[in-house]
Image 1 (tube, rainbow, N blue to C red):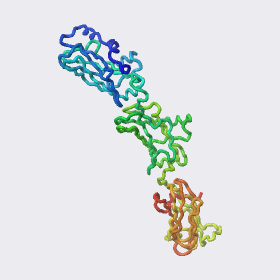
Image 2 (cartoon, rainbow, N blue to C red):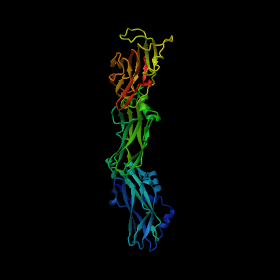
Image 3 (tube, rainbow, N blue to C red):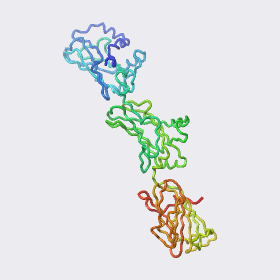
Length: 478
């Protein structure tokens, strides 16, 4: 420890420069026979110790003779003197120890019959690590000795100069890093958590070396950085930064006692991804560790650019509601189109849903001249697009269908039972559809005689209960 911490003797001559004239005059006065002069000896070099969080610095005072009575000597922090010495170049490559980073006793107790005493200053290791490569300096001033004792002239200040590069090695530093720094690409089925409301991307803050007691860090977002990186070509041209309302990120994160890592949560709701389906942009963010009340923020690895690929939305299976208006419906009167003779429809209109029973249907189907569609012996064709609200294997039902039925989805024939029977449980078919995509759909109905109904329903097991396809998911033929 000889090179690590410089003791008071080195600095006493320097300190003496700043002594006032009055002190010099008092120094000429001989002490009373029963008093002792007290000297700030400095650091007890062999007893300096360091652990994971603190450096303990013992210091010593000495008397010109043994104490005839026990007494105390006051101690105060004297960083004004340190500032003067640093500013005038007397101590180079140095910084002042913050007053909040050093603990010291208010007094030193001198026992009866001794000619010296020791105290211990406790310094936060993190301050030394943050100033690695420099000297960290503080000074303690002796004052108000009891029992008539005096401070020796020019010996009132204990100067502590800690040479951090001798006390620590670069591998000893407790660096805080945000993942590994640089650019982090979040891709489909990557390291994120899928939830019903959106996606949570965990950004891991790591602590190098031995964990400590609990502490907090702050996360800062550097919004302007994204435009700069897009402008200089570091990020792709299709990268955008989201508005503040469209995402959330933890800005205060706590490391638990003994923890080597903590998580910053970046959360993006599914509707934000859905709104980006057409534009298909990448979402980009620039984060950094801005503050930590313990340890050292890494100069480069504490900065992270996060780029989220739009394909992450493939893990989104929340219900997406469209803005459809229904399907193009063509009605044919006095024919069941068996076979289809290519005739023109009796009337063409938009039906919001295929959700019809005999009550009022087809009584309300009339052509431009006001002529009513035949109640028996008619046919219907609905055509357009279906917007799949979720991802999964769909079952399409025409089980409540009187009479014959056909159904095509994405060009695939799911039902083909165009006869004069009705309400058959076998009139259904399955197909896998991707969420948010529009698929062609075409349904046929024939009515022979008697009652009539047509309900086009869907179901996705464990995701979507059986229901009539709503208007919002149906789009007419262009």
